[in-house]
Structures are given as structure tokens and as C-alpha cells.
Image (cartoon, rainbow, N blue to C red; front, top):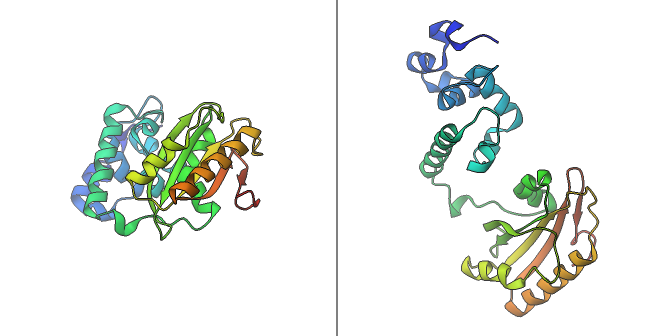
Length: 224
């Protein structure tokens, strides 16, 4: 590992930005400017490369504070700097209802819930869609813990649906065990929520179970 100060000054990210403009910097150089410092055993450029190898630029824009601070070498201050840059970019591009993600398939659902693959406890999240199948909201932790038909209440899901004017919902939860097959509680919960949705006039389009390597879709298996 070479220290950043051993790199010719003109090739250091900040100096390069000043002399050549930000458009001429590599992705890792731009991120290195935000990170400012590296960690033990890695200079800031090496840390930035490591982060970008794990997270694409698009995925990096979606990471939350808790996700960022789990990355070795990114402390609270660095996470806040990245989040502030993210938000400024989103506001400048007016990311809002005109660029809402559209959910067409199970693959689209997984893209919105991929973080669940690595959770060691069961998390139930809910994706809320408008009449055009655009995602208007997602609640990442509707319920945490072993899903039990007596504990997961439809009102928690449909209160949010009403608040965000959703016309349909998709349920997603993980199985840390690695077995994607639905349990009896999973089946009962899905049925109860679907029945409540019919009364509310809000469709339950799918319930997707994910593990590190597998996916189970109630819709694809014709259980909905």
C-alpha cells in the first residue's frame, strides 16, 4: 500500500479535480474526495475502489446511514458526507414522482429488497404501488422477527397504503435459514392480508420470499 502523499501531487484526487475538472476524475477518485481519508492498511483511493467494487454507483446512491457505517473504513462523518452528496444530487435532478421505479416482475421486487438477503432475522417489508405499478413508498421494516400469523396485523400494512394513496401492495420477507419455501404462518399471513386488502379495495399483487440464493413468488406459484 502506498500512502496518498507518495502519489505525485498532480495525480492526487483533489489536485486533479482542480487542474482538470471533476469530469476527468475516475469514480474512485470522486469518492475518495468525499471520504477524505483511508483506513489502516488502505489509503483513501484504495478504500474508495474497495467500496465501488462492492456497490455500484446506483446502489451507492440508495445506501442508508446504517448501511454505510457498516463498511469498514467509513465512520459516521464519512457516511454523513456521502449522504449529503446523495441528497444534493437527488434534489438537483428532481428525483421524485416523475422517476418512480416501476415494478413489472419479481426481478424488480428483488431489486428493491436485495438488502434483505443478508439479514440474520426475518424482516417483512412492504412495497406500495399506484395504479401504474409505480412504487410510491416502501416500508423496509413492517415487521421484524419470526413471522407469526398472530403478530403481523393487516392494519399496519394498509394504514400506510391509505397514507400514500397506494392501489396495491407487494409483501417481501427473508428466510435467514436459506429455505425459500413458505411456512404455514407465511401462507396464513398472506391469506389474511389478501382478504383484508379486498375489503379495503387494495390488491396484494405478490408475496416474495428471498434468501441469499433463492426466491419464492406466491404469484408465480399461483398462490395468490
